[in-house]
Length: 292
Image (cartoon, one colour):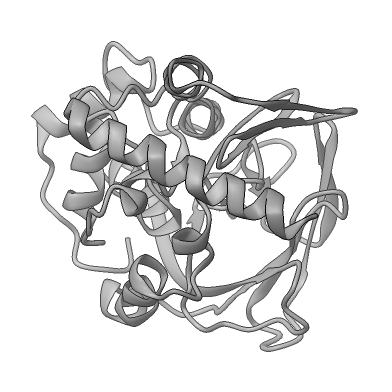
């Protein structure tokens, strides 16, 4: 892993694996890589609820593992930082890369460090003999499974993604998002990254009024049928077709977090939960008023 490698913490490793559905540490195989990736995006939500609760986080690898083991989710730095640590502990050769996400409103690709991208190398298979893989559990609407790190178009369930050399650096890579989803794409640089390369953007993303995560409470999970998205009080499923449900009661909203997104918030007290529901409802009403 291309940052300071934390020594194996067997207790954390095994707790993390249990959350992903593993009873014992699996071998470092292609099959394990696929199973771990699918489990990460299905069982652990990509979410900004912690920001709306007024929490602040670090992005050191062991901190990210602890957030996820505690029953919470996180955004890209937490998902990919934790997953890279677990893969490293299991014997995979995993690398960190500085990246930049291009959202729907951003006109140009960039590599500002607002995203952590991962690759795994030295893991050949019959269909990918050079053994290089792109993995990413931290894009929310990103891939459900690993993708061979080579030029191509990859369909996973109802969504299709692409990989090609980055226009910003031909030694780097460009992941093209599904045109029916919210991300245009993501570019990442070829060299090694550390948490120091990402720290400034992490601070901006968790505190700036202009940050999407500060402006919107977002929770996502990915599975073979598509993407479940909670934006404030609006729940959507984005698959071959789109469904939309407005959650109008506190009980329904918290049940959705727990049942749909595996985010029970059991460590959050009732006053904080009440304040969060009021904050989400106020933002929802403001959005409705702005939309006319």
